[in-house]
Image (cartoon, rainbow, N blue to C red; front, side, top):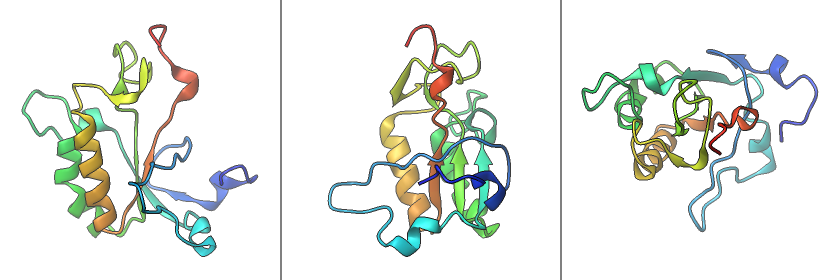
Length: 143
């Protein structure tokens, strides 16, 4: 979907750069249902969220997925089309999460996989698409 030249020129970003990753839809549901939807990103406003500093839910001084979920109404009220979440995968945190050791799980400082599932469900309920930052070239030496 994003192999087209000029992708970054066609999207108005509310922060940063990287890539789009499709979230695996629950069984029997589709994230993109028609070919018309395939170009949703053209002209979209995408709000980047850096989990570590966005919103701390449990008071440990580090932002987390539940904290992001708590602020989604605010983000949706800004009129954005999607949120783009920086890495929250399991990591030794030598590079603040950009040194991923397990791309299939949530780092405990950010929550658990169920927190992410609830975040996605809530975001979709508010009409927001969810992009996660898959930093494949930034894997940890512990991967």
